[in-house]
Image: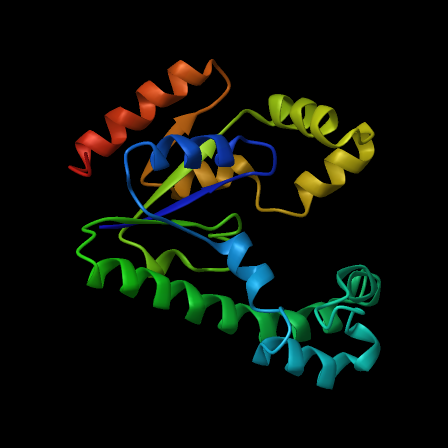
Length: 197
């Protein structure tokens, strides 16, 4: 079974991913792959340079994220252009990693995709698992984690699909507002009900 793991910003998805690793279930991490596809020599990086200019290359030959970020910030067309380059490259690499694990005989693979629903990637997986915290906890945790103001944190949260909407779409939900042990107990329950462990 391929499981899509997702959450909202500061919901604790990485913590739950670490718990899943403890059960020796392989995880394909979209964030890691997003960094890999723009390393020197990667075709996605070359496409970005062609579309946005040679100044997008950093001194080490990789992507100058800060510079690119300032170009796409508040520019919907440029952001869409960037996504049209990055998303297919990320999706292709993720599917290659999943296939590789399956070839090694792994029956289950977790795809850790922060924007699973926003990017409409849920068709890549059999079931989706959402790491949930209530909006107030989410705001508080994000402010504590990043040292951001309430307004900054709110804006970042609002740039994603509301977590309550994600809750409606998910096949299973782990409420991560409590203790780590409570979250792990819920995880074990879900994985057992899906016959993953």
